[in-house]
Length: 440
Image 1 (tube, rainbow, N blue to C red):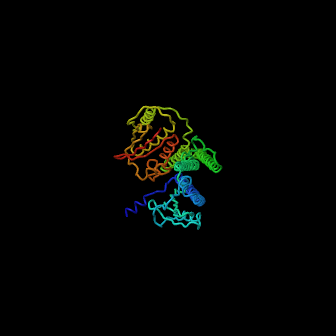
Image 2 (spheres, helix red, strand yellow):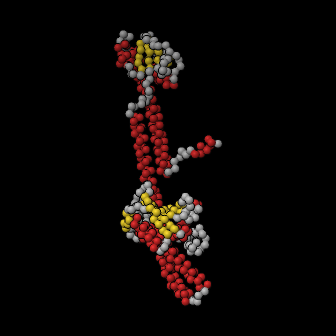
Image 3 (tube, one colour):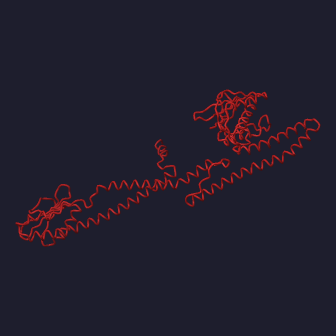
């Protein structure tokens, strides 16, 4: 069973598209190159073999005719002239051998037989050793024996430079394949990066609409989609702002009428309901506008003084908000958006525990880390992400003192992204919640 699971875990096929395309193209080109080389090699081998055998047949016929016509005393002087490297003529009976020959030996013997014809009886033997050497024995017209000693060389000897050329071809194949894959994958990578960084509210560079027609078309479609999203977001804010404006007048009239009504339990409930409606409208618009938190211009602030000032404002109203520890240092951010984030987090802590602590530190990457700490009931671990969604409430009551609207954390999270930071919620050891804002 362990062997099976180990086999399933083995993944020789790469996961990235670039690696897959690289392997497929490289393998295809190498196979095609190998087939081309093999065909050329076989064709050259057959041609070289045919030329060699034809040359052997012609030279042997001429050489035997010359030696047969020369006087016996002069034949020894001609042997060096008739030597061809792969075969030579020996005056005498030659060496003893065996009749078994290789396929190449039989082909050579057949061509020698064709060259000599039936004029001189021939016998062929293979000389023991490397298995390639053979001798042909015949008797000239004057009765003197003659031996043709054949030691064939490779038909196609390997050139010294050939392995280097093959390695150079392999390197060129790898380089060209890499360049092709890089050109094919780059638009996808750029599109994926642009999609990851998509934020219609930020002045990020548009995707370049250049390159091949298909790539340029995809870039234009992506930029058009980005513009439509930005337009839809702007419309959302405008619609909510218009609704808020239109609702303000009837809500105000209803509150005035309720105020002049006679005191009763129903009056108090009506005033509370109107206040709840007004608050829902304001927070709904605030959430919609939080996506456009970058409309505020960044400025440099002293983060320690900024947090202390916020805590003092709460203390002036009798709220138990303390600065546990802080660091002094300048940071470039959008102060109104940051104040709204911290206010929402502090109000959330005060609602559940009545106290809140603020801590300002630097993390290992050099980012400013602002923590709003409380000792409340905390949040179940499986709902830490869910509470960041709009209108999500752990407490299902719509009461201001318990459930609220479910927009405070959503607004804080969206504003944190708008100013280039992030908001993370963690449960503290010993109970309570830590809301952490990271600002670079």
